[in-house]
Image (cartoon, rainbow, N blue to C red; front, side, top):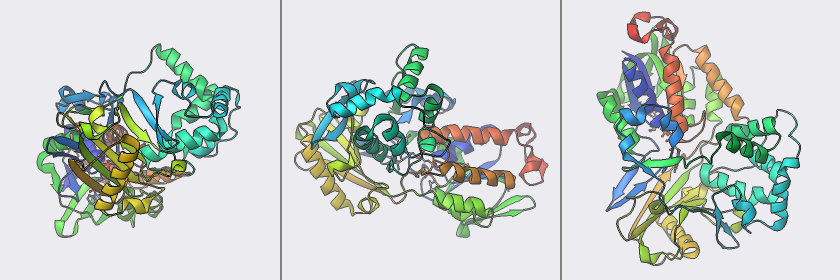
Length: 464
Ligand SMILES: Cc1cc2nc3c(=O)[nH]c(=O)nc-3n(C[C@H](O)[C@H](O)[C@H](O)COP(=O)(O)OP(=O)(O)OC[C@H]3O[C@@H](n4cnc5c(N)ncnc54)[C@H](O)[C@@H]3O)c2cc1C
């Protein structure tokens, strides 16, 4: 019998449990895999540090919590390297550098003169009408023109979210753009106003830690200690008079006053079945198409390109199999041994799920071809690793807000049930951390009685 059972030991579940532990609650984390961390997996291979999942974290998200200090991670922080000067897009069969400042696209000839002119008149385009959910592609075409959408936005959305700009909801993925249009009538005007009001260009926001992003779940799990139970797959959750009974098959049963479901949406859908059918259907409607990450390490002289940037994305019209590539050893120090470089290629996602399921050797061959063609990489890589993610990033498709409302409704209908994960407020690690803090804060002010009737189970200092 525990106060709270957290199901799923990825960043979302671990961070929520860690906050609850610090509130003095008796919490357990039930994680299906042998190791906690979910998507956040870092591996060292002979001097290379490889990220199978997230590679960067948004500095603002960690700064908003005291997690960095409490876990001893602040001193481990590593910033983007000095060589990160460009972003690249594939155009006319080669890599085209785009400077990272706002005028980058206007000053480069990556877009046709007509498309650049169309971007310039964005301020004169009237506001969209109505409150209806709009796709990212429709919004961008309306405001910046079709060429910008096809050659910039679509590859960015495919590379970052593994998604399709025609089907993703602008409101759910980029709510700031919706607000800017409402407030200023134009995105260009909104960007200018926010820069003016901050009086300086925002600093670089992405960073990592010396030991990689996997340091975060490792340290959270270490502090949680024997509260984390790995190799435990939860099958079913039932309600009873005292709260919930969690059935983990051969892993046994646990009674809990409250339960936090912090799994991927398809698992949440299964666990919600019988508890709240409306929420189960909503979670089941959120797809997370497969993704594969191909990591290759080379000796420096094997790669002709200066690798002076974050990496590149490729528009669909270029016919490339890769969604995007990161120049890992340029992004952060300590990612490759002296005299070596490392690259990660991302395949699959919404546009090419079957590619993400291809065998590892086929994916390595594809990546080698593309790196050879676009980056001048030659010869056998020094290391090669492939990670298949059968479920990649959740897709915030049109109608996402309604699905989330149905899921949040279940929390009102079932006292003591809490839902979190990367399909609610954004798929980034930062968004997961922020939501974890919010869920734990909501639980801390909730009278124990709301959790199923037995107030005595909640420690006195945790009640309001
Ligand atoms: C390839 C890739 C690259 C990414 N790059 C970035 C990046 O650079 N920056 C960034 O901010 N974000 C990035 N992300 C996104 C980010 O990593 C994830 O959104 C985030 O880590 C998700 O954490 P989570 O805990 O919500 O979910 P998960 O990590 O999916 O954790 C869910 C956990 O639930 C467990 N579970 C499932 N079923 C059960 C069950 N029945 N019983 C018990 N446990 C169960 C799973 O084993 C898993 O550990 C990337 C993701 C991927 C896949």
